[in-house]
Amino acid sequence: MKIRKHAAINTLSFFKKIVHVRSSNAINPFKCLTRNEYRALKKFRESHPFSIHDSMVYTTRTGIGNCGEKASVCYTSLMSNPTLLFDSSLIICEIHGGDHGVVVINDVPLKTNNLFYMRHLRKTTMVVDGWSEDWYFPNLDLKDSLANHLANFPNPLQLAKRHKIKSSILICHRCHQNL
Image 1 (cartoon, rainbow, N blue to C red):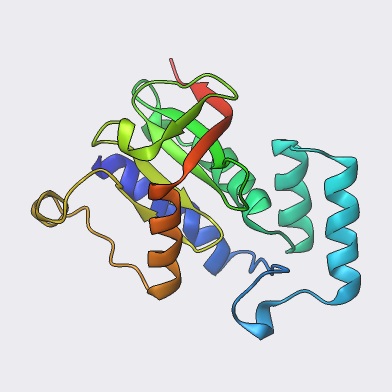
Image 2 (tube, one colour; image 1 turned 60 degrees about the vertical axis):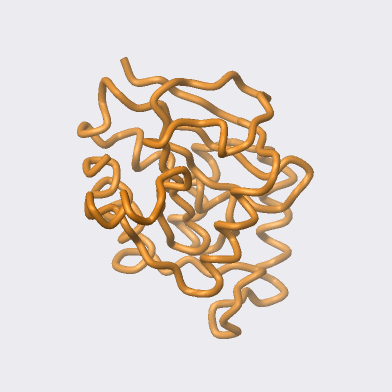
């Protein structure tokens, strides 16, 4: 679990140290897209429906993207992290019928288009949320998180997104089992 924590921290540092990605739905008005940038993002999404590679390239090149594009960047980065080999399944999922996507690192793969609740996954399951730049173990209680140095205390926005992810039905869009 500590390996997953460090992989997530390294992946999320991309958004702070390399490319500051701006979103159409950013809370901070200085990180919001202009009208033209929003139109470009919308046009990109229409022409590349859920392409992880294309989303990652678009976002890293332009610095524009919402949760789906940021999840693609995180997924691609985590997929190339050798420390996650042999014991991790990487999943891009989103709230079913909702509007937020994240990467889930799990012990076992899920089937594409599988519906699930986060609470049905193992305690070792980790969520990496590129949009809110957050990582956490949703099924690990606070006592175990603190005892194992796996706690990441959220800001109010991250707390709201965590609650939404934990209480919603999720759908698996892409799953890769490292063998």
